[in-house]
Amino acid sequence: MQLADSVEITTLVDDYVNGFLSSSEGISRARLDTVCFPMRPGEPMLAEFGWSSLVKIRKGGHTYPILFDTGLGKNALLHNARALTIDLKAVEAVIISHGHPDHTAASLETVSAINRDELPIIMHPKALTKRAFLFPNGERIDFPFYLDERKLHDSGGKLEWNEKPTPLASESVYVTGEIPRVTSFEKGMPANMHYSIVNGELVHDPLVLDDQGLVINVKDKGLVVISGCAHAGIVNTLEYAKRISGVSRIHAVVGGFHLTGKFYQPIIDDTVNSIRQMAPKVVIPSHCTGLRALVKIANAFPDAFVENSVGSTFSF
Image 1 (cartoon, rainbow, N blue to C red):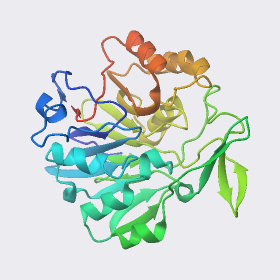
Image 2 (tube, rainbow, N blue to C red):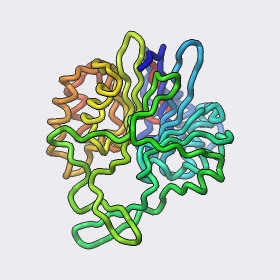
Image 3 (tube, rainbow, N blue to C red):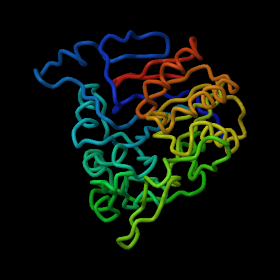
């Protein structure tokens, strides 16, 4: 894996926005008047249950802008990009972390806005799968949105499938592809809850095998790892990042850790302890991490923990 000179990560969609977070070294926060008092009344920056980040990798005098996921609503990503004066037309590729709608539902609008012929859209083949939740009381909720290959193509996208690690940006970035499950405690979704819909039938799908992340090897720092939801487990994701890059040092981890809800509470301590052993310098849990896990991570990493918010930019 090649070295990147630097990487810049801007949070375009997340569950949370806070106008009173201060900028500091390596962290730029959206101005208060952008977050709370926009120029056009009634149009503050938007938070939603979703995830999208703009990742700019710099190497050898060239900048590679990559969009990682597109969020849930039709408006948040595009609205927030406008508020931050980000030109999405510069984006060279879109990476889909997995097929759930909180990471993909705005994909058609986003690809159309980027307006690039045959824009690479990199995803695991299973990201196109239709899915549903089935609850213990028998209630079934079919996911209201799923990725459509033809519609993405008609919007200007060119789908590229990756089950194995895929290099980008002169090989200074890897899209992980399918992540091996090696820890004893990261078991995926709760039993008998998450299903794929195959030929109209429900097929138990606890592992969400299309889950993947981004790995950037930054000069003089180490690995910067970005997750979407980390359905594979954030520890599994970090271990695989080290394996495919050949780099053992984790500098920063950013994104969803998927530790929210009663099912995941029992593994929070194991997760925190495993991350502690890797000694990252920066930990930015976001999206689906959950309040209990956020508090424990903040306490366990008093110097490394950084609060995320829509409009934040992290530079490494």
